[in-house]
Length: 83
Image (cartoon, rainbow, N blue to C red):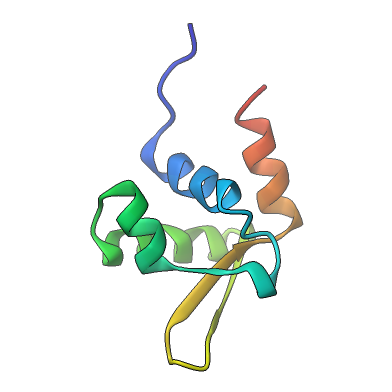
């Protein structure tokens, strides 16, 4: 039986499940937070950490909201969670 994923990995997996794998598919932290029923600041902190580790990218959209998406390394990391 597979063990439960650590919560930060669940955040990354959720971004992948939302198909946020390119800038034009990026999602707001509040969307991810709502799906995971967690605080937006907590989720954005986790995603910012993944960005600093080279697994995600972010930018500010035209409404002034931060959006996140997985880069190639992030996609590989999520896929490795299943092996």
